[in-house]
Image (cartoon, rainbow, N blue to C red; front, side, top):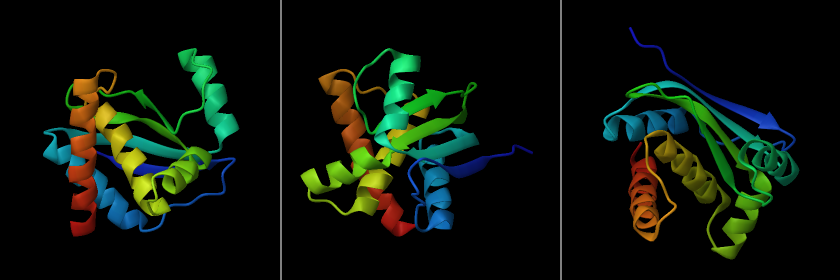
Length: 143
């Protein structure tokens, strides 16, 4: 039998998501909807400094970002680490006049979509990613 875990961790942010059981069910539903199976997925909530250091060290990008995904998937089994800057997400929530929880969920599903193989470097790919984010944010409300 396949084993999957979805874990939530903290590095320098003090953040803990609400409704963890519902989030796990939602993430699994997203993965299944994309025709994949779930392996081990870790969501690590951190501050800007922590994520910036990772961005520089591992991706050679000297910029702030809201999410970085490290993909360890094998074939159809989705596994990886999704690092989320709570500082960036809070700022985005204010800038886009969205509730913080909605922005947290948006970057979480964004990371999962990357693990499922979606990209966002071109306008076309970015539009597909945004559409899927909106679709799966609506699914969260149904879980």
